[in-house]
Image (tube, rainbow, N blue to C red; front, side):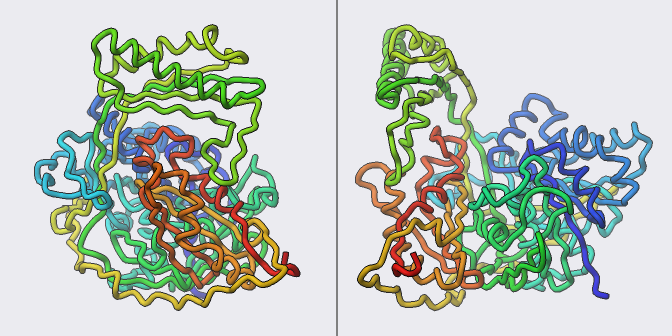
Length: 591
């Protein structure tokens, strides 16, 4: 019987559920590995600020105090190994914290940590580097600089006997790929296998998003209360079965897996991570039983000669005041009130000879102001949200102090349901750093080894053989319009200052009609409300014939990205929901 490795996806982000580990450990059979994805572009900046305040901080304590401490007996009894990017900006400190917990519990497990991603002290070396999307110069002052490392250091730690591996910033998918390299002995130049293992990690890294969470057909997903966390049963060729523990809620279907597969993947034929350039365009998804989907067909190209890098840097402070408005013309009242509040704040600054706010925004949440062509502003219950940014903290505090005056001085129906937030603002700078300039070290039970630098090559996207695009289907007489959601599943997500949105045909026969309607031009027009007036949207389209999908990248659309945008959907989670209302022409009999 061929060997199979079972990996569980136990965390999708830094504050994911406390229930996941116990649920996955109770699976039959239990997974050999649990991977925990705690990091995001936003989280690494938060960890940097934590480290600046506390030299022993900068990592995810929850990994030890919540996930390990509450489940340690089962972890030991079932010999489950843990892989986590909980190290944040301080993997060594995180490993020491875990070791302390284990010692207090009288448990002897080997803890390893991976270092080398943290480049924060090397800012001067990077002054000539340009931002990979905007071309901007490197920031003068940074909170953090990190490289996205790969999976081979994780595999090396496991080869050396580690039971728990802590990393800092690495490719999210590397947390799943590392155990597969260790178990199957995959070599660095087995590109198809490395790509397939990367896909396994990518499907698991967002937890329940592959088991029915955020699924288009949400009404078909049972029992959100006890939704199942994902399991991957992986074969030596890299193919896998995605499933979940029996008896749990959720759903594993071709649709749920397809949505997660394209989540935050810009070019499915050139998904670049540290260890490989992945081609997912011909991946096959097959329903292999109840809550079981077989995934196969990933291909790979040689790894590039660079790591992706991310720097976070401070740009000031943001204050946000929100208040619920009830009644007729709620949206209009909320808009006027928010604008008046901002102008009132400006007047106070002028009176004290303080510089103007860097930006100010007013949103009317509940009025569908951000929804685009399908929106409707007839709501009678709206949350007004006004925010201001300033380089200094004090002017923002003045604005928030004045905000409560709205309750008695402005709109009728202004309720006492209100809130204030004051947060430091950071921005991301994405770039490429040569692998030759990054030294990666792995420490296992106090012994440190330096990882050899793998052979790598520049990547030329022109070498990709793109699939032939079929001729568009012309609409005929008597055709009807249906919303895209009747024909497709959809998923969207941000990446820096862009987002991608995928449309996945529910049936093969639907794809020609979807492709005829969804073009870079039509999708750009549909999302035109995200751009300043007069700016033409820039949209790139990619075909994914393996499972009848189209993926669109909507560039420069995220108002600066998740850390700086004050918009209601700064992570682009709802962009697919908007696209799924787009009208599609189909034959009357199909409608």
